[in-house]
Image 1: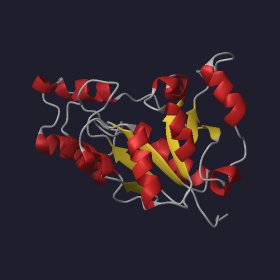
Image 2: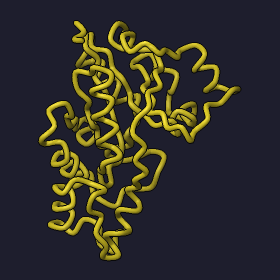
Image 3: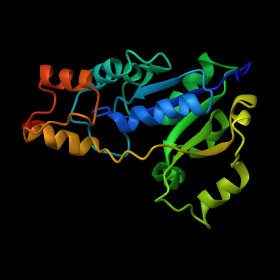
Length: 218
């Protein structure tokens, strides 16, 4: 089904490096939720974790090569270009200014949802976008507290609502659980082991060509 104001998905991250866990989640949600596209947005400087091993330019290049042959997945460079700490609220404000009538779906994992109230200006995020939570069965949703109250007021099971309204809903959607860790990939490369089948060949080729994850950078 095609919606007149088809929502787009937003998937941010360090992507250090991007792997099949990221890509499969993006593709499954793109297809299942009838999104116009999913934009992968590499952050410039993460706020809640240490500085990435690869530079912003390297991480951007790896994301670009990873999605080059999938038309439903796009790369957005807004955080790389903005520089500084990458706050989600700033990115959503930028997207809302450039896409004033397009519903935005911020994609996150269930673990991120559980820590959502610690995000910078988290209450304003739902004024700008829906939350689409990639649900994994090993996580239990809280029964009390801020997140529980948020789910009571915003949770929907109807995909159409993501397209009919610009923001404000939370939708949980199962995805194929691929327990792949970018940290483990970097360690494997640093110790001379192959991460093949955990990430696209084109990304691994880039890493080998540029020596992105040498032992000294881990």
